[in-house]
Image (cartoon, rainbow, N blue to C red; front, side, top):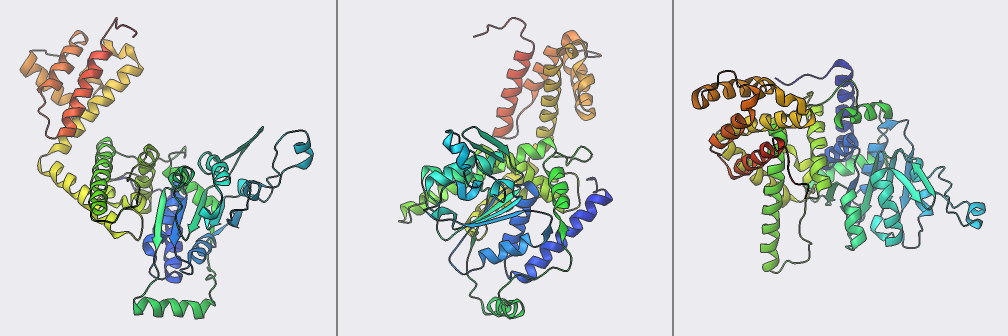
Length: 434
């Protein structure tokens, strides 16, 4: 049973869910995009909205920013003529005379928590390159100037995507992506017209806003930076999520190659970067917290399209669901989850022994979690004739126990090989250095 949220976090989640509902009533038929942006806010990541002119990218961004108080907001429309000082603040001329690049960051993106850059790909590559460190590391690093930035989330909007070496790096900083199409269904067109008349094309003023500190508090919990509360991601779910990511990447690549062969070429090879893979754990924790839990559950993995798939691109979600469901059904039917859990608990034992070599003097079974300890003891008595799994039998016990396992999937077979290598390395007393 997953742990429930403590009252103060439950209250914060309730506020955030009410804010999402409020924005959904103003931005008609944009629920998928809105949830994606709020997930980015929870994980302290950036969002890219791609759409043609006039579909409400700026309105949606301003409406979401209006739900929070106490945050500095930076807004800018990009253009090719702009230089980095547009975003970092004007250069200090006196310092420049001395040959030093120092920006006056007051009022700039560097001193803001939230940012909106419209038509971001209109910016020249030189300026985009300068933005990379600030977006990713939350620092301004220019010349001798090295300044920490409180940037939480930046939303970039674009009518088109310009592909260069620099823009590909920028795209990787915007982990959450959405394509916003104009609505042509009569009901949604009618509802949009209603909202336009009601608010004259502007944002709806919320009756209740959320202190930005509340969002930061939830974000710290989600990202593992809160000293009092943490969201648990069980090892087997973490391992399975990475399998789904790999399978999804493979299926989507194959799908796009087939489409290119049919004459629809032009998109670069699909790739899930190590950065995105690592940040998927934050997305899982955000999903758990917004569902009132402090532990990620297996079903949360199926909701990872909120990060991995471009909102508005149906084929990506369909292919992800196929990747997830195929693996989930296979692992469930073959009982591979139980085997995976056992082997990952053994990995945890090996990690602890590696960190504290003196634990080699204790029976390995004493260090394992209860189910693994029980199975190790039973197996040792039946197969090896070892009664209490004395320390001197540790290597023999672990090696023979792992070799006795018949892997139920290819991934578990590879995991078994890696664990056997780790046992061998752990007990090697005089390995050559190179």
